[in-house]
Image (cartoon, rainbow, N blue to C red; front, side, top):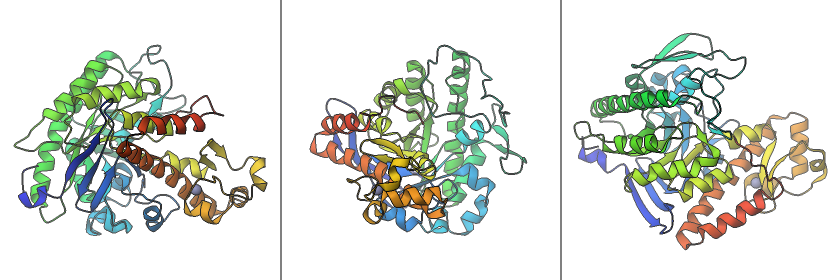
Length: 420
Ligand SMILES: [Zn+2]
């Protein structure tokens, strides 16, 4: 951004360590609400709350920033209310940096049952209208935007690049994302090409609208806009998307960073991320959208990702699935009823410091609300800390050793890695 010299100082990325044998790096993102040491995992508070956990606890467990979903906050309570409250952070009592996604992934996946990471052979099944069994498509995309049906009350709504920008400016997060079309791995090559061009044109419109809104709302803290790269599993499309969006400049306004988006074939995750990061400028941060499995986090960091977000740690925690060094376990399994020690001996979270697995097993079996709270604190701490440890290992130079050690143990009893 070059609109206002007072504002430009509020967002920056500084690379600190860059590996020589891979794209892995550590650095610092500076925002108006504080710094984020990268790589970092950003916990998700979909509706301006991490379900069941106070923001104070999220800060205590090491969360450096939180990400909320523009689609959900647009429907409820409405972006104008969050704006009047002083923005997302003030509204939810979170003083640190915040992110919002563009709403694109949510509206386009409405009712369809999209998955972010898919373990499958994407070559075997091709159709542009693939939807999950027994699901009704609730969104329709055209060149101007997306019309969708609210999952709350069935009312019809429309998002365009301009509306997404307006909503995200009202929400007021430090880092916001351009509106994009998220395709599935099942779409045909021809559709992916047309969709990528649509996303490029939407990215231009987002930059233009973002510039207008930034100038109009110059009394608000600066918001950094990240362009979102699509291109599915195709190398030429992924590289083109990165070059196109990195090269966009609308009257001096360019993207402050980049979101790596779209559905991703788990087996090719590292390769696809590498294609994009090789093309992207080193002086801007890269966020891998919606990824949070331990092995995927290592793959992302190794290939140049700076930040991640994912709802999985909290969503899984609420179903009693928690992380340990030896893999994921389910606390409702009979053997945990008498485990009078923490979920994970090595964990330094509030839950593991004060409670036993046996107590959590009891809370889950008796459906007590605090079960989800304590399990979420543990899972979020586990993943936040894991990425913090990756950052530390990048700094001291033993990233690959740490990766080998952690993954070897985590998946030892669980050879079939799970996709989220
Ligand atoms: Zn713990």
